[in-house]
Image (cartoon, one colour):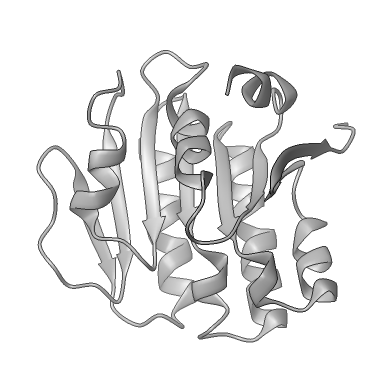
Amino acid sequence: MTDIIDQTDGASNILLKAPPISEGQEISRSLLVDGATQPNVLFVTYTRSAADCVQQVRDAQVGQIGVITVADSSAGADGATTETVSTPSDLTGLGIEIGQFLSEWDSPIHVSFDSLTSMLQYVDFGTAYEFLHAITGQVYAADARAHFHIDPSAHDEQDVAGIESLFDATISLNGEISVRTRELL
């Protein structure tokens, strides 16, 4: 995983293209905790419980942990600040919650967004694109690092390519791991 961390060094926003059941969770964990001294970790999830998210980094040296669950009103998780956005299509509310964590925490901040595939079940592509454009800008402005999960087999290739254009780096898991980065200004 060190090679992936090295290849994505300097990227603020990373798209992780992987099927839902894959080694994507291992790569996600590495992106969250490797290469930074006690990062503050924020999970944004449509698909997992807060406790499951916290478990992913439980044995790592991290600072604060935050979890924003979407449409999951289950209990929070020990050791984490949890917030809930009750409506899956409420991207404004979700953006406000993400922005609050980013503005209140000091660097380093690492964010895991799971998953764009789930989000796209509730909003159209154009709305999702605008939301992601705003959020990736917030991540960059906060000097944070974020990775966003997507299952490319669940979407039209053109939509995936459009979303991919918003990211500094893309990690693809399709049998083999490949990393593509764009030149950063």
